[in-house]
Length: 220
Image: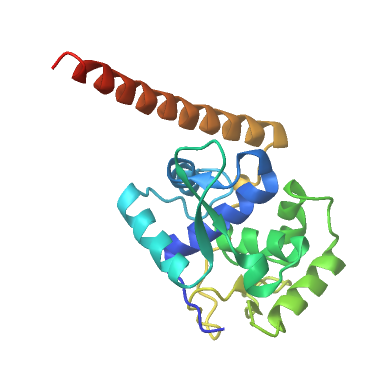
């Protein structure tokens, strides 16, 4: 695999997978929803403070690599974005769930991945997670994941995605904080619902501005 993403591109790809799997009714994402998803404080490591410009630049790079598409959906006045990973490499839902967690939170053990992917589907079980990681590491278009050396005093290996440059000879990564494990699915859905309402309100404001300008021109 020749694709190497920077930190912003990696975050965007992870967010698009996450939103498709956790809140499909609000997917694909508008630019504002995508930026808000990248800046979330839950299920992210590290937390990022991103503005519009770097996100737009990263989206353009991802589009050139055919990892993300920009589309217009029926009934929407705003362009939206979706990932193209299924067409890109034929990933299964199970593989996407694991890649999503690695893209959003960095290197993790099979046990951590088993716990954290439960927000997308029924718990896979560590055996299934390990098998899926093996498939991703041996993928014909990959490899997409790799096993890191064990940290001193730890029994389990951690795995990392290979969408960005990784030094596999030195385990220099800090583990994703356990405290960042999602509290409940209800709280996640509530946040996503509020983000959607904010996005809809902005659209209504834009429409009202346009109507006012048209009305004003009648008297000029």
